[in-house]
Length: 312
Image 1 (cartoon, one colour):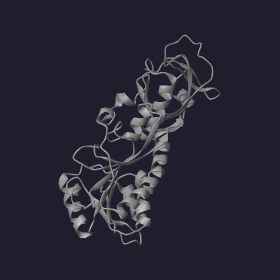
Image 2 (tube, one colour; image 1 turned 135 degrees about the horizontal axis):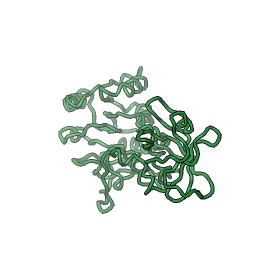
Image 3 (spheres, helix red, strand yellow; image 1 turned 90 degrees about the vertical axis):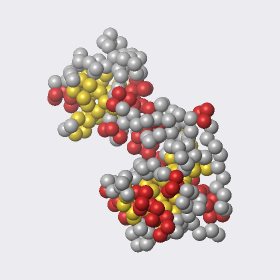
Image 4 (cartoon, helix red, strand yellow; image 1 turned 60 degrees about the horizontal axis):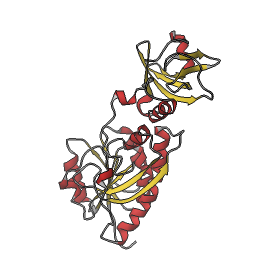
């Protein structure tokens, strides 16, 4: 590779690891920054860079501008990479490297901007997810797109499964980006189509709680998958008791029970925990979360939950 590349990688989530490995493998990393609160990532990155000579920079919200500015100068950084970094970069930072900063957004742009694109793709019942590499500018996920990789979301994909798939998917554009950076000073990119743009804030409790009256069986399953393991399951209320539902399946055949949506049809060790949905289907709740831990759904019977009761 003809041009020397020295990157400063900013990361805060294991989803970034496969992409980081691509740059480490070719010796193109000048330094890596991780937030002080994220002990898990400090350990992961520390293991990755062991014996490489690549320094690990620990930053906080109060000192990241000062430390990143110093690192770009000290390690002669000419390319910055953001991979799930939680702090917004001011212009004084993203304009410092000769090739600017590039963000790895683990979602499709411009239709899925915001801090939780993986979750949002699931909550929106999207058919596809993906990884988008774009230039960092003054907005949030608004910069020109360099490249994008897409993948189909399977019905059984949970948040954790989809995140793992996207992590490995990101290795391909990371490798392609290395080639682009090494063979030219200009990085090809195209503006985002603002007519298709949508920005999503962090979801609130209401977005992550099952609405038994309005949501059909498929929507409930998608919400449950979206919240597993993130949020420890989709929220559900029974007898004024808030629990999380982390795994459920739709049973074959229509529900002939005349009860309301959310009605518990069965709750025992033989048949499991079965609940009626608004489209007259039955879902079997396999795994729940309570403050006491994760359990089989039917174990709610030990807490007095039984057929005939109703989720609110």
